[in-house]
Length: 369
Image 1 (tube, rainbow, N blue to C red):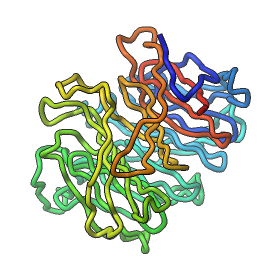
Image 2: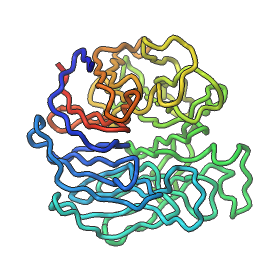
Image 3: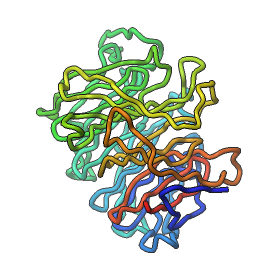
């Protein structure tokens, strides 16, 4: 049975599982995790009665699980499915749509690459993680969408060792060090780099991202780094950053991944000083997709909604950053066709409602009580 503490369910729609949900102008956009489902557009003007407006399909062998929308322009990713499958003929990147009429999304163009994983869109620039010819694994790319019909890459950064076409040689195995997700705050890109930890890049000159600092704790910690994002206000007089390691593709048997809190008051010397793990975890090894996945990418207060895979939604208060504590939670029912909950992504809308998508099936709309 579903259970909630400090949250109540406002609405639900039974849709295919998703990798990401974003809400703009009372419309929820869901990027799905399995073909042929690509992207759904859902009317949430009445959150108690969400209804699908449109769905875009994709060919088999294609993953389109990420979506961003600004100014009636929708961007969705295309990469090979499942991730890691070898297909030299696969063509991916970003698909660009006009969604001014959300019931009839109209394709504008493609920004082509071998593939694109996560990305952020601010209405002008995309900060993404494409796979490009000549590079080992995903790199950082800044793409200008001032004209959505003619997007143009304007900046690029990679970890030394990735540019194999330029003669560089990695110090890691395979694509263990690869860009997962760049996120812009002011003149910085806070960038998760999978088993390469995270890096902070300066973009005073957006065409030439510059390394400021980084930290790689994998190993000894076994999980890849999924998201790194600073809190947009001081917490007890300090600048802090939240870091999510994803509970998947571990280096070895371990307990599930958790949330890190890192002091970046001196951004050249990031210092991890606290963490949070759900109380149910007893330290014994678990299968993948049990622990942390992703916190809400819009930090509005010290209360942080987090999609915690098999543990549903957790709201964690970081007001005392040395001792983060859970203040609310929601555990959905196990979706039809699944053996356990797989909460994958969470976001706010402009009404303060919380949207939680399961990677197997179903979108919940919740309200903090």
